Length: 64
Image 1 (cartoon, rainbow, N blue to C red):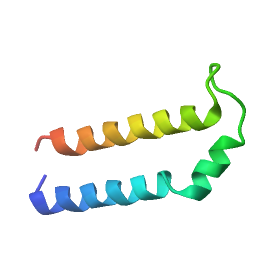
Image 2 (spheres, rainbow, N blue to C red):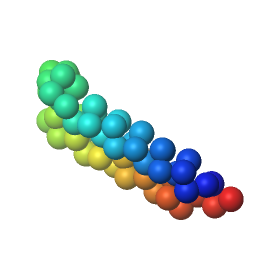
Image 3 (cartoon, rainbow, N blue to C red):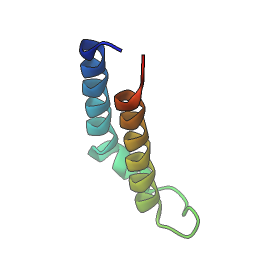
Image 4 (tube, rainbow, N blue to C red):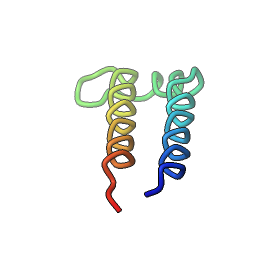
């Protein structure tokens, strides 16, 4: 993958992170049912965080 394409994808993931950790989605996640005994907000935060790390790993480690 070209460096320019990789940079654009990393910016897209950063914008996704800004949206994912912004107030409206956090408020919506807080109102849901508990997940495996965790409060829904914590489950959302850790799940979104893990998903973003996985996306970043896929983008950075992708070979030609």
